[in-house]
Length: 220
Image: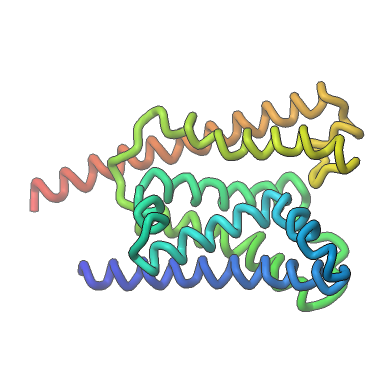
């Protein structure tokens, strides 16, 4: 049973790594092929200034580190709270893409459907499955949903600084030019509440699952 669990964990980690890596790689290559070499660095910054791309990169790092199984990065990602946070963020990518942004638009070639189906869809699903099936339960507490807000709030602050400098925003709900600061505050507040609700739900599930596992081990 233990070997089966390890195999399932490795399979899901490989699936997450490949799904996210393939998705962001296709977008990255498309961006670089349309730019001169001296703009590759700035294009890289633009690429990973999208929440989807940055979060999928985070999943690649997590899955790669856990599969490697050694080093500081692996030890950091070994924390169930860190794994839960990463799974929450990638789940939000899928929810945001399909239910807030409205799904794929103007996909001009079949190859660009691949990242839509991987980075935007498959990776979020795999993240949820990985957390439910493979992440150790019982170590979360009520502070973790609040701590996990650091990532989306940090991303928002980044764009509130960067947006006026570059003159655009990647998503309509943080577009100060279109919504004004009041509109962005309303949207951001609503999304932060959504993050908090989802994080709290994960914490409650974590506690319930840990309690159930403890009961099963006691009666076994």
